[in-house]
Image (cartoon, rainbow, N blue to C red; front, side, top):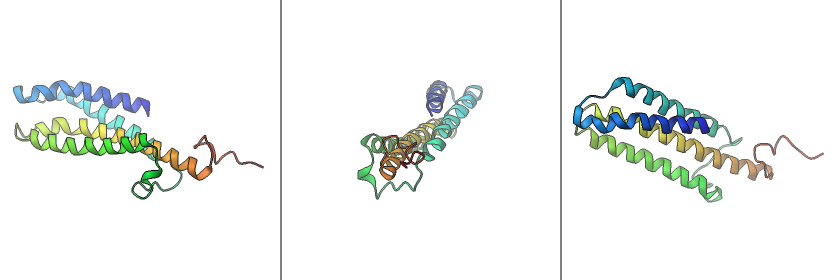
Length: 146
């Protein structure tokens, strides 16, 4: 999950330069944007999939909201703020040119996926600890007394 997070950050860094140059030049710099695409989306999914698999039971976000750790709730909220901000930025960027949202969309998507993955991992671990009564969370069900 750490590697995926680093990949998302690298993808945003690589794609930020062409994204900021786009309004001035009108050129997307496809040779730089494709690595950014792969890093952002690949890294985001590399965080999301393991993060979602942490919980052994159903993760009920709304119903159990107050029982989750504050860090997980904060990351969950930050993920959705990132998604809404990305949508707004892409809509506003469409005014500069039709290719501008395509330059920006995966940068926000990668960050959203990574934040959602970390939030799901934290909340899933909290569910595991609550269900097993163990401090280890992930190992608790495998080690049973007697």
